Length: 398
Image 1 (cartoon, rainbow, N blue to C red):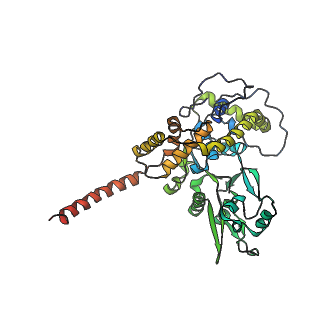
Image 2 (cartoon, one colour):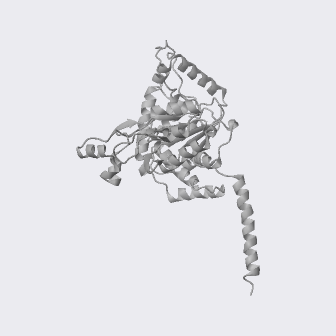
Image 3 (cartoon, rainbow, N blue to C red):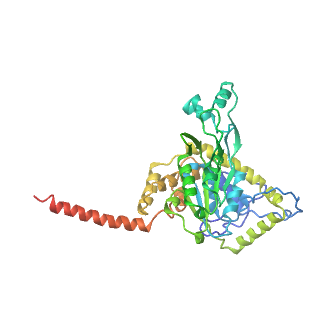
């Protein structure tokens, strides 16, 4: 396995390649961290123009980043992931490789995104007329489909993000849109590369849509609301500019991605990249068994997540930790506890332990304090005491 903090390989004896039995997804990650590519993988490339992502499990080290991305897949309530680090550390590569591990979700067959759950919660009037007719005939409104990765271009405009109203609306009351990126991202992964370089209005629209799970577009007196229940994943290079505090607070897990310190790990990373550039299909084949197992494990972790509980003594430890760090935002405990539940599910357990909090706390709690706010509240506290003393001296004296 690989230690999160030191990026050192722990245990040099690799398990046998034919041993494909793993207790949990966490065990699988430990296994592939020490795996070495076979000598036979560099073959003549097939010459196909198909773009194949670098396998997520072939990433060397960066265990904290891997955990964070998998936890976001398992439990979207975490609030997304922000990867912070210099260029060339594998941030975007890891995110694009994640698509091979994603679970399946219900995908609407309707232009307006109608789903069976709409009828369950809001009745037949909650879906469009065409879907109401299909439901009455017993026809499916959705199919199971894999989560997709939707990437937001750096030059995206607000119209690209939320969509543009159709000049020729349909014959019923719903406003028809040329769908924007947020609509396409529903029930998918939304990658926002270099989030610190986007315009404020675009970032605000994305964050509001992510927070509420839907957004509304208005055209005159008409309005239409569209779902935007996506897993938000952002990346940024801090040397290219800071991120507004209110934006930073919206990301649940914050991962500082550094370069690999160990020279053996750097050499292994080079060998894997070289093999991938020579024959990407063969490298994907090298990790195909583990990738298939990991995809199943992600789905299983997602299925058992509702059953995972946090004992009262464990939640008290988490709250004490947040209090000691003087963190004001309530998103701190939401992220800490939801990510800890997902991590327990990832490890095939239904009860959160203190060890889970130890692993998750740095990811969930870093960069949540503000020197400005701390100074502001301290100054305000002094003023409040002065006001209280003045009241006691002036108004409470007989």
